[in-house]
Length: 338
Image (tube, rainbow, N blue to C red; front, side):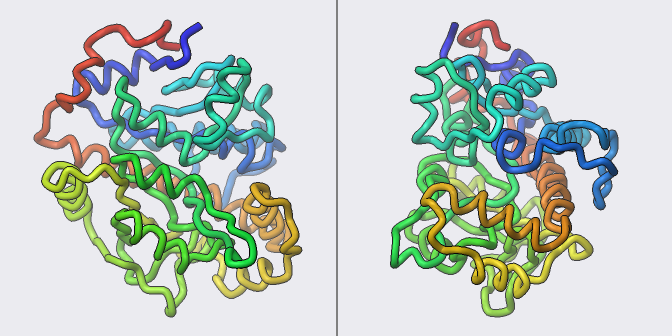
């Protein structure tokens, strides 16, 4: 079996110059609960099945919203030791079963693949797929990026997402930096590695569950898709940069959790949590302490980021033909395409 497989729909979309949006799968294997929500989420979620696996249902919602925006979803995960770029329902169901609670960063991909295993992909691992010569996808949607952890001066704990952003010419649509992290330090790191950070429609830096703090202004505000597209084109085409553009999309106000409330929960959390597991543990703590409001907020921001990513992908390809660098896509993709 091939190590890399590109779904025929994704391959054909790229060949024809249609907009494509990459989606990570760690949200389904590790980020959100497997237990059914038992109700519709607070946000508008057309087609939601309240009795289905919550993480998978959220990913399916994101796929539907990407399609509704005129783009093709390229859902990335590792199944049977193969990095799959474009996954559908049956494969995602197997991934959730075999890769339950497992997520792979860029560091882990080769290990999981060599073992013939299964894992959901984080932002950094999904970016590996986005920049692969078989595809070169320019836009991905996620929840929030990883970065520099709080109290990093006591123990260095930095997400692999930052290196992925430093090496991947992709517009990453996220609700900013996960609010359980040291956001100011993460913004400094993003500046150091040359990643433009754009906040969509707000002067504040979005903070995942929260819309931001007055003390943390965004590096740059953008108010329309045209401005985002022009910045991306200048960054990649005019300057030849190979870093990402982070588009920070604030959570809708009606679903947001106050930043001070999240800060209190994080401050009271046991800081001796095992390195590498701190983010999921902290997010689980926030969810428990907010009585489920954080889960609704998470689903809402993921859905909104999928919508926005489809708009950006469409804007990037408007009046532009297929990327000449993706000429290899006119040839059969590695493997059976599934």
